[in-house]
Figure 1 (tube, rainbow, N blue to C red):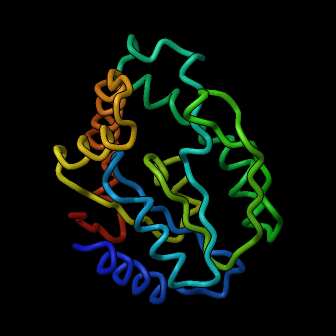
Figure 2 (cartoon, rainbow, N blue to C red):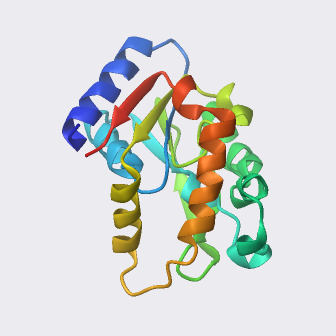
Length: 195
């Protein structure tokens, strides 16, 4: 599907799920390079009442653990401190309050700028692991974005030309563990294939 087709399908799902709740949480999950961020932007462009919370903003600095020597399951557990995202972003937004947190800066591998997200009718929780079991009870729906592995890898390499790509193998192994052990694709309310 094209990015526009994916955004239309996602907005159709959201329209069907609309409720009287003050805030709806829609996860956009999938592996790195699948097209999750593009889809989130496409939804937000079509729905003026949408805000985006990115799991990428909450990842733990790589310097805090030996990423290359972790098992895929342990890497899954350590990469993304989901409780921080829940406490600093999702819970305030669910209460109609502003979320304020310091994002992880990937280029410096350290805490970066302060992010402020105002309450919104629809909150898109975008990023790998966004529909993990511990967060699922907060979500109104989960969308899984899929893409062929070779396309995802090409997109990852293209994001940082000339940089060391040694992180891709352990990162992908953790994602593969997540897909095989916890089945986020099978549990999604909508699966979209990116091209």
